[in-house]
Length: 302
Image 1 (cartoon, rainbow, N blue to C red):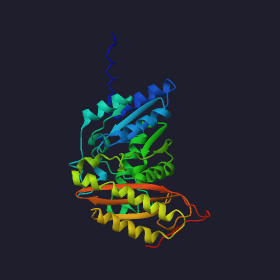
Image 2 (image 1 turned 60 degrees about the vertical axis):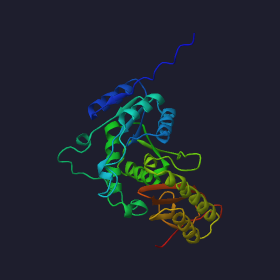
Image 3 (image 1 turned 30 degrees about the vertical axis):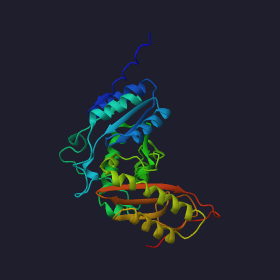
Image 4 (image 1 turned 180 degrees about the horizontal axis):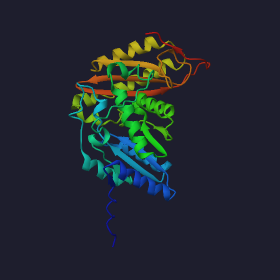
């Protein structure tokens, strides 16, 4: 007789910083490495892939779930951002995460909180101008999470590539002793990047959404040989608009490290886009490597 599989072990719930630090300290005392996967919940397979990568690198994995109010603008979707905690915890149990850090707003921003972490340069392009204050909110909350947990590594998805670079710079500049790892974007079979916001899309919008990834690929193919980026970007923007994206906040080719916009690709770069499909804001990016003779990337003058 075959016995039914045992139910997954429930994830340890940690609600405050002392409990988190005590648990991490106990794992460290046992010689076990710790990885942190920061999230805002509404978990999907993309998040779970981050947990699996964290498990490959460290013995113990903590997943934080906190919908951070300071990274949402006044007209953004903070109030309707999906909150499905019990479903999230069930998924984390299935994938074998060790603990979930579940702070509330008062824990992260107690009365009198008055400190903000800002990263210059990297936040002044792409999402920065269209989401003022967003990256200060991201850098502040992630800095707090890193210092609260002090893991060996923290894992972030490359879909939010600008966010990843901002966090890397903040950790480096502030001497936070945590390795910041990027993980490849996970996609649906039709190319749409997995995102918690995809659930906002109507059936018609969902059919149109993969056009963003297709446009990014075409732009990357066009510019990888050293061709001027402007014509490819103009064609790509027109294709996004034809597919129903409006407004297109940006479609850009940028240096992979500095995020400076490029006239031509002569080193590691990214093609990045942000656009609305109906009421839903989608972002995505793809890597592009130069196939021309390596040299110094030429900044684009906007």
